[in-house]
Every structure is written in C-alpha cells, then in structure tokens.
Image (cartoon, rainbow, N blue to C red; front, side, top):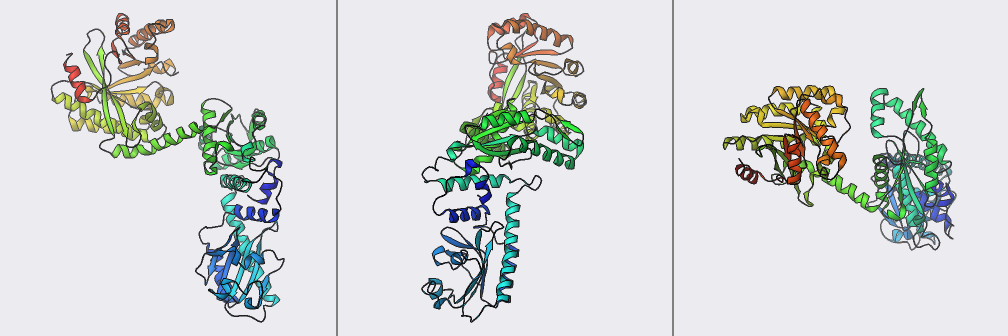
Amino acid sequence: MHADLLKQSPLLTPPLPLDAAERQRLAVLDAYCLLDTQPDPLCDMITELATRLFDVEIALVSLVAEHRQWFKSRQGLDAPGTPRSQSFCAHAIVQAQTMVIPDARQDERFADNPLVLGEPGIRFYAGAVLRTADGVALGTLCLIGKSPRSQFSEVDQDRLERLAAIVMARLDMLRMGSYVDSLTSLPNRSRLVAGVQLMQAHTAGLAGLDELPQRLAAVAVDVCDHTYLTDMVKALGWDYVEGFLIQAKERLCQALGEMALYRIGATSFAYLDRCDRWQAQADRIRQAFAATVEHQGIPHHLEVSVGIVPLSQCPDATELVPSLLTAADVARADGHLQCQYEQPLGQMQKHSFELLSSIPAALLSTDQLWLEFQPKVSLSTGRCAGVEALLRWRHPVHGVISPALFIPLAEKTALIRQVTLWVLQRGIEQATAWARRGVAIPVAINVSARDFDNDDLLQLLGRLLEQHRIPAGLIEIEFTESAMSRNPEKLYGRIQEIKRLGVKVAIDDFGAGFSNLSYLKHIPADYLKLDQSFILRMESDYSDQQIVPSMIHLGQRLGFAVVAEGVENEKTRRILQHLGCDFGQGFGIARPMNAADCWDWIGARQ
C-alpha cells in the first residue's frame, strides 16, 4: 500500500509502531509491485551502460525488501538477490547522499561480509538511492567492482545519480501502468487488491490493529446497466461514452467526499468503508444519482446498483473484485439498490462459470450430452401426436446438470447457437430413424431468441432435411414467447422461411412473458403451447380456471392448435379435454425418456 493510501482516510491510519518509518517504506515498496517481476528492457540498458561508463564488473538495480534485496536488473551477476543482512544497499538507503565504499575490506561494516570474502568478491561499491517523489527510498542503482578504487569523483557521483533518477522515473511509469486507470486517473482494481493485501499483512498480529480488516467493507457502485452502455456506444461512439463515464465518476466522487475511489470495471467503481457506516454512504450515493447525469446536453437517468463485501467474508484479497462485481450484478438483476456478498453467492457464480466454460467440450464429447423425448398426445384420442426433444448433460465432475441451470447460462452467450445446432442434428437423426422403422413421429426442437439472429439455424435445417430425406412436417421448431419482443420483424421473416421448408412451428411457454398480443396474431405458427404455470394449479386456483379456457379459445380462434404443458394427473387431463384443448404434455401423460423407451411407449398406445 502506498504511503498516501495509508494516509488518505482516518479509518486506514493505524497507530504506528516503533519502526514506523521502515514499515512505511516497505509498504511503499510493496505498492510498486516490482519484486519478483520480469526484467525491464530500459533498466537493463541502464545497468549495461553503467558497467561501461564506470568501468565496473557489476551494476544492479537493487530493491531492499524486509529480509532480502532483489535485483530488478543485473549486469555481471547471476544471483537474483541476496539476504538483506549481506546487503550494501540496505546501508545506502538510509543515507542522504550516494554511498561510496572505496575498499570494502578496509570498511569495518563490510570487511567480514560473505559477499566480500567470497563471490562476487566486492571491493568497490557505489550506490545512488532510488527515491520516490515523497522521499521514500526503495533501493539503489549500484556499482560493484572487484578491485578497490582510490577515488569516485563528484562528477562520477552526479552521473550515477542522474542514471538513478532515470531508473526511478521508469519504476514510476511501471507503477502507473499497473495501478492507474488511464481513462479516469483513478487507482485501478490492482491497486485496490494490493492495498487490501498490504493492510491485512501489516495489521496481522499487531495488538489493536489485527481486527481492522474485520471492521471494513469494500463497496462497489455500478453506475449503469451494461446493455445501456453498449447501446450508448452504438449510438454515440466511444469518445462520447468515455466522457460520460468521467461525468459519472465526478458525481460519485462528490457523493463520497474524500473517500478514496477505485475503478474496477467498465461501469463499476469501488471504495473501502467501515461496516457500520456503508449503508448511510450507499443512501447518499443513491440520492446523488437521483438527478440525471448530463453530458454534452444529453441527460442520463442512471439506476445505480451497489455490492458490499465485508473484508471478513473475503480473506483472499484476490477474490475481492470478482465478489464485488457479483454482488453488484445480483443487486441489479433483482431490482434492488444493494446486495451484500455471501460465500454461497460467490460459489454459485463460480459454478455457473465453470459449467459455461465446459459446454464447448461437452459438445465435442461422445458421452456427455444426450436427448430424451417427452410425448405429446391428442387429448381427444389419447394417441401420440409427437415428442419434444429435451437436452440432457452429464458433466464429468458434477454429474447430471439440470437443463434449467445450463440452458439459461448458454442463452446469455453465443454458445446457445452451437447447443441448438447439436440438438437439431440429433433430433432430426432420431426422427429419421423412427420413420425408417415405419412410424412417423414428429420431433419438436427448442430454439432460443439468439438462434434467429443469423442464418445458421435455417441453413442447417434445410441441409439436414435434404441429407436425411425426411418429410419436413416431422420436424417442429419451438421458440418462447419472449423471442417475439426482441425483434418481431426479423422473427416473422425467419418463421416464414422455416415454414416454406415445410417445418412446423410452435410458440412455447405462452403466457409466461409479457409480449404484446399484436405480435401473436401475425406469427404464422402451427401450435400455441400454454405455459405449465397455468396448468399445474388449475384444479385449485380460481384465476387459472378462468384464464386457461380464455387462452385455449384465443389460440384456436387465431388458428393455432393449442398444447397444454404441465399435465400432471388424470383429472387435469379430463378438464383440458372438456375445455376443448387439442393436445397435452406433462408427467401425468409421460415423463421424458430415452429413444428406445419412447419407441416402446408409443408402440404400446398406437
């Protein structure tokens, strides 16, 4: 943590122990995040130049840590560092001027040093301090010769100090690149994580301070929905959006006062606060964003979401930012101002991501994915009118995964197209196999709104029908009601193209969404499938008893064959039959089953 970070808020300023100056120096060094990093070409050029300019065997950029010195750059030396107890530079950093040792064997501080008596055999040493703008010494640019020198002139010292200043400027650039957000000039998520790590490390075991992290919470503020930001980019361009984000940042800074703010995501910022006062601060943030944020004459009414992570719930600081973003996302998804992170929430997020990242491998596997088929029957005759293909997944680690979990995950990404194409190919193959055995069994295949965004679905559908020489009427495409509101004109066009192939079309889960009924009357579908939520409670729920007959009547008047989903028992089946519903589907008729069992089930009832 930088020295200024330690000072920036009273809640982060613990009483300093006796070795306060050295602890602060180590904190600043740690905040630069240079230890154990990759070599830097510019630092290497300077140490190489120094060996030639001063005619020495060794030149080092040495950083003095708590128990060791580590070399960010080294010329003429293989070792990456040494114990601090043997370090000449540990003595140099406490001096105001460049430290020069003409002959180490004649200096009582170093005469018995292993680096003098053994390799590399130091005799001459000169170290110019690498000092920050605040005067904090991080280490040195040092020269080492294996022979003593009678003098090291003021001109030589000046040259070495100038080179050290260049090295320090380079270290500052490396720090800025790692820790500062280029757009807002705020410290970034890496700085937040490093600061929390250092606070945890430097307060551990100190009486009166070890509970400090337990009393703090990290708070994330997401200033706008990601979809809103994406639409803004499309409409107004990135230059405008960057200006807008700066305006939002300024509004947030005004609400927070002198609290240190970090940028941790495209639209997300974070700060640290006491657990007993973050709620009041969140309320001030909400009030601050109640007024529109205006940029270039365009007003933006922003709905902020707040995620809270008590540091006691996040002992691993590297998990802090993901936890904050998760909490803020959940708050937005639930329509709330704020959400406090809990471990199960993070575990669920990790599990979801793991499943999502496993889908491509599952699609290529021969034994993870399979189809089950649930019959759809005529309610007037009891005969099977077709089956719905349902995707199943057995994950190699987590076992069988519910489609209610992994299908919504895939639908948020382009992966859903690959999933749909997999189901489409296997579903048509199964319909073909049944037809060749002498029974034409229509197979319904679910697609998502994303599947209508390009020509992949239509092209593969046409190609598979031609390849398998199967009557197109044996294939049905089901899409949910919610797809109608996404892009109705494109949807109409896609459905008409599918219908021209001879394929049947069904509107699935009707009534579960909030689509305008005007969409419904224009869609050239064959089936209207009533969402099971209306059917499951129809025996006892008066409202459903009034709604279901109206939905059946509406669907049939618009020219659809109506299918009731969620038929769980014989009584419900008889009620639907009495109401004139065309088809039924549900556990009370048949559960989903594999292809062989489905064939036997159909054969026993034909």
